[in-house]
Image 1 (cartoon, rainbow, N blue to C red):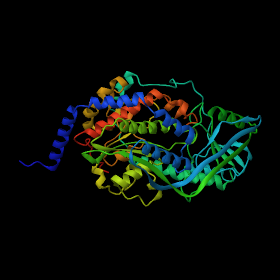
Image 2: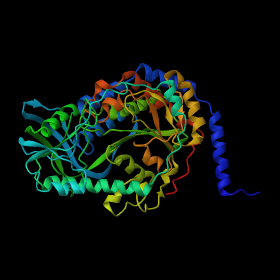
Image 3: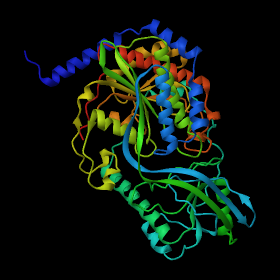
Image 4: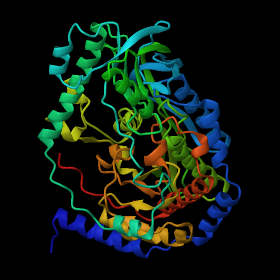
Amino acid sequence: MKLSILAVAAFALASEASNSATQEVDLTALTRLRDEGLHRSKVMETAQYLCDVIGPRLTASPAAKRANEWTRDRFAAWGLVEAHLESWGPFAPGWTLEHSSLHMLTPTTTPLVAWPKAWSPGTNGVVHAKAMRVDLNSEADLAAQKGKLKGRILLLSEAKPVLDEDKPPLTRFSDKDLAELGQFEIPEQRKLDEEREKDLKHIRFERARRAFLAEEGVVAAVAASSWQGVVRAQSTGGWHVGESRGVPEFVLMREQYNRLVRLVEGGTDVDLEAELRVHFDDKDMPGYTTLAEIPGSDKEDEYILAGAHLDSWHGGTGATDNAAGVAAVMEAARILKASGLTPRRTIRFALWTGEEQTYGSSSAYVSQHLASRAAPKDKDEAELDYELQKDPAPLELKPEHAKLSAYFNIDNGTGRIRGIYAQENSAVAPIFEAWMKPLADLGVTQLSLRPEGETDHEPFDQVGIPAFQFIQDDVEYSTRTWHSNLDVYDRLKRDDLVQASVVLASFLYDAAMRDERLPRKPLSRR
């Protein structure tokens, strides 16, 4: 009897999953990994250098390049091979913050806690102007304000309420929380055409708004922080060559912003003083990926990949987002090398940049090494995720696509690993459960088939590579540190990062030692 190709593939997949479920974990190897990682950890040394010495690492900035070079040299010093930088892009003109200040001068003199948005132009010295409250949220708003804004510093958002905290600032998963994560949620039906039009409208309006502010002679613009008690400043979006950079834009601590709005709306003149000094590189700058590896033995031509993003925003020092993940990935590499274990497959480590803007580095790696599709000719379409592009080009797989068994990513703050998202890949569930069992005493217990997005494993998942993000305790990530001025070294939890490093090292070793590569989901039909 002859089986169809699909039947053969299904039988092979089922057999692989069955074999994987009964495959034993090498507890002797795990003991060596735990001994090295738990008793001689260097994870905090790595994190401290990235945060305190190099500081914030905005994509395409000199600081990001220094971080790439330093991490490359650390990998090499620990004995990893092929430690090098791989360029991608060009991305955008590099932007470096040199000085920023914002003060209220009348009705009282008050220093204001504010950060500029990345890629804002400078003020060309100290500037003074009256504050003006205005809404600029649509093309109609722009038309209504034409000719009325020259020489003003604009307050672009309404006053934001300061609310009682609805949850404690520091949280960890309870047993109930983890159990809920283990229950799969049926996804809502996506309306791709509506999403596409909404995103395109936003891209085009923000471009028009930046140009309008500059053309109207606005001195600067100020918005309220999206969180209370901290400042969350990201970017103007104006990093594209040939587009207007707009005017200097600041994000102000919510509580102080509300005072300015109350004064202005109550009829009191508010005089502000601002100074912003920045440095733009004159041309599109490339971004870089740091790469290094531990060579395998009998399956050396196949590999496992682990990564985290090295870039950060500029308000803090990029500690929980994502020096924490970078330090854990680097420490996992050090643990594996120092333990003297020889994996069957090569284990490669990647530190990405551009995650905060476009997944630039990880997307470029996928395109250069694994699979690619032609970019849309329309520049707006090119900014959309391929799922929202009107007619995405077909995917072309490269030979290396068959060599990468799995990608593991860390990017959810300083919290310890509590399990893993299996990304709707049912065939890996029994494999991961077997790997987690010897790690239960470290708190690693929960497998979730739910998909998890918005970080560097997504480009891999979209081309059919088994790619996974770990479940981590939130700690303060969604209440204090994410993209904020409090994202600094002091917010890192040593015990959590030590644990995460050991867990990652264990997963990588287990994946590298399997007879078969990890099972794959079907490629997207789009």
